[in-house]
Image (cartoon, rainbow, N blue to C red):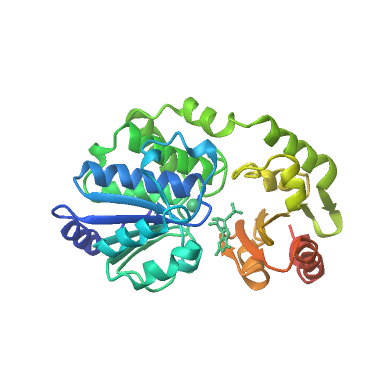
Length: 342
Ligand code: 5GP
Ligand code: MN
């Protein structure tokens, strides 16, 4: 069974949402398909309910998500900081979606932390921060988008899920489960997908919009990364790719162009740990993926100020690309035993 939200929380959310409210929705820095899918699904639902809703994101996000319904209403904090701070100041309710700690919203953190609005967390990452008035945190859920479906359903509004809301939720579940293939994809999640299709979500169009919309540059960057930059360390069942700022520039890099690259490293036979390092404005962002019991959540939180899920996590380093890779290589021996287990 999928998670049932506690009745007491749902009753108090119903009370909170009675009458028209000023609501802000937020999601994590560099939003992905689940972050944008869950946020826009909730945005479209709350608008239908007659609330004054704004969706404020901490940074830009990939072009392949710009088809999502109501994308034109999204406010980017980096571009509209003053307006965003003003809107957050007026908010009665703030939804925090697809992140577990306010550090994940970067420059928006102090503004949201100081707000007196009721803060509602809906998320599937491990170890949520303990600052929310209501916390719907389920790390076994496939995605935050699946939790948004359950949230709307628990409020008795499943019949309000129209084509737009259904497309947003479908996109979030699809991207966070790598097209319905991860272990987090339960039979109940497939049942939700069926209901989304019945509500009008056109599955083939969503797949096409997200996965068949690469630029030539993006595909050539993929080719370059696999041919020239992929390093395979069979002795640690590990593979990684590192791209410098200059290399990304060679391919006219745009946000989202390296999304999914780390999965190619993980797809090599026998590999259990994959990492992808990329450099931007002197900061190194790292994506970790693993198979089986090996926890990249532990590895990234212990060594790279990051976190996420057991098999998919992210982290960062401020000391340069070569240094970040050198640090990764230096810590691998301490994980060798775990990596070699079946
Ligand atoms: P990605 O590698 O796709 O950026 O992220 C993989 C997962 O790890 C996502 O669920 C994402 O939310 C989480 N994640 C990515 N970067 C960070 C980070 O810097 N800190 C934490 N706590 N989680 C992260
Ligand atoms: Mn997610």
